[in-house]
Image 1: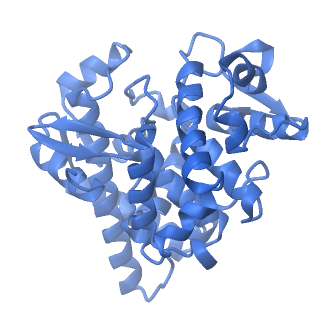
Image 2 (image 1 turned 90 degrees about the vertical axis):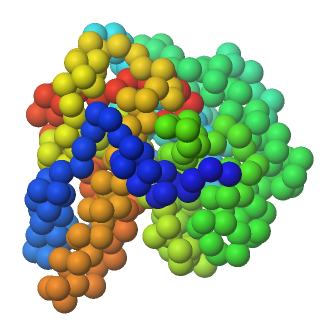
Length: 337
């Protein structure tokens, strides 16, 4: 089985050669986020609000939409100097992951059964490419990999769960961690693991996002209340580490910075990549604990967990996109994030 995601983050951090977590950076970042919560400028409950292009109702249609989108939720970055993947929908132009969400809705509006497992278990790459095409004909990256993931997930849902992910949810006994295990057990395209210093480590970005997105869809109620949701970590990608660098939480050594500044594609599973993602996971776990302690001392009972801290840091990167260009990020072409 290997280590769990939190255990993996701690193991990678303690054995990292090129990245350190700064106690001072952690304290400053935790103080910053805590102050925003205490002043009322940041309400953690609003961090996971449904945008207008996400499903609003926790029914079969909403669940199917989330599962479809999260099966394809990987590798949207494009070279800075090349055409970008953008989708304009109902007058708004979206980028990256949100562009794909907009394209899904555009397809559904046109009468497509795109998010139905029976349909996408057999979809051809040309058809998926046409349905998800960006403005000016720009194709979504890794099209064939996306088709392969859809075939796998769709076929298993049809053959084992009557074509409904809700039947899989029924097996999880209202546990986020059990649902995570079921997703990993059933769908190999969600198994995001690596070998690091002789240990099998787990990162599981997309599988955890799927569980978290269902928690959000259900607004933490009913079969999606997931009382153990705190067992999930942050979602280890290539953007949140930029925020953690900016806050001086993660300190990269010159060797890894020199590599990143070359702007080359890094292979999935490279030791640098595993260090960046693993230390990010552990740093957010430590941040979450510090924020909780600060709020407790101030008598504040706001809900705080690593998912919500991750959302804040992801949004912080977008808000400060210009400044973030000072902090290079690792570029990996992978189905895992």
